[in-house]
Length: 310
Length: 310
Image (cartoon, rainbow over all chains, first blue to last red):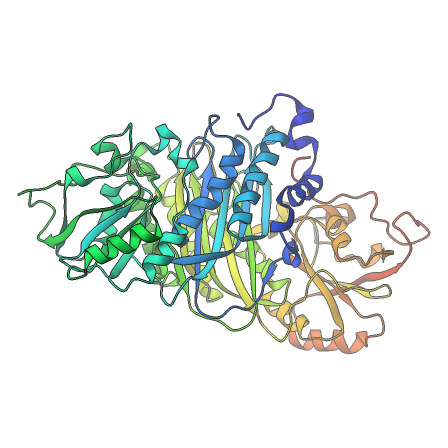
């Protein structure tokens, strides 16, 4: 469904900003608490919380993260899910969000209502409060950015730093073909998996795969090491191939490092008990040397993940 | 200065995303701490803080909040200042921020560097840490949205709710002509003033004037009351007029209600001692009745503030 309408009366411009904001609050429903704890004041007031917090921001932009083939409800859900995936990648728990949206005046009210209802449904599912936002007009644009606050789900966060030479490299789910298959908006953020992994002491570092394994794995690789991957082990999504699994991006899967001396069988058994329907794959391990040691295994040097401005 | 360049080698697209992100970190400098407390991981980790927090989000969009006449440094500063003004309006203190930026590939590196240096200088001034963000490509767009977290500067926040019939209406600074005079990017957010006012028990409610007094005052007005304003008292900016002062918007001044029985002379004396260079004006008071009681004074019914999608 296209966000745009040719009928002036069906467009957001027919509402005007004040009525539009009232409609948005109605569409969001109970996930948006009353001011000062939600929309309606200069800032939202967040109740006091113990411990450190997580903060992340990600947009969805028409023509970039969605097009006319993506249902507007799924676009709204994706806006939150992209950020939930970042919270998952730290082993965190989402709490509250604000969003800023930029719309062409010709965007249809029906599209926007579905967008917000999709966002609200996803927020309800994860008990995230939408506490504020901004709506602005901008010709030719349908874009929204969401900032998500979270806390630790357990006793620690997992960052991208901490993997060591000899550590095993694991990934959840399947990789590649995200845009062609619709995975890029149908995915489920790995929040339960991320929280569970952060409680396993043998897991040393974690991130989500959003720009493609070939690009993202570099951020997890310890200095002086190179990832040695087994091409045959790659969990390639049906309809994709090795190149797609390495470079397509928008996988929103968890990539993590497990201590080289850990009992991998115990980890994998525990995983299957807890997440029987989610694939877990050991891709290889971090070895000594540089990326140009092409002695064996899959070399990533020839693959590039998704990069803006290329 | 236009954000766009016709020379491909001077454009952000010549850098590619990875080098662009490295450049942004360099331009931001020490206001951007290292991961996991800043840019470079899936989320930023914010150290634990006592008490409740403030959260606000506001964008700057090319053609809407700035144009070629606004220096790029001032655009970067304005992105933060718009949000600082919201924190000021609650009597808060800013702490950390994330920003998402959307750029046409033809945006010039020089423009973008100045934009980020302006943002960094403003962040340094207020000791705000820029802890994360996102950069995405989108044709025809130069837009950034910033989410700002804050805490209380004193023992309480001031919200828009709390004014009563009989309360006096005050505003800081001058109103009107913001776009024509450049005030919309040269303004100083009223953080010190907001924090000071939140400590004065006679101040009952507060907000910032961003869409024009005629529109914004409604949010402060208690139910069953109407603001009775003295047109002659309006602090009209030089080059503007009563209509401009009521409707132009982008004033970024503080509007607040003072208890009807308060010692206004004491308040005004204390203000002049603390803020000798900042004008403080009593505009009138909230009286019984509805907005259509046009018996005397300035009636706002004929004026509308800034509204998107009109």
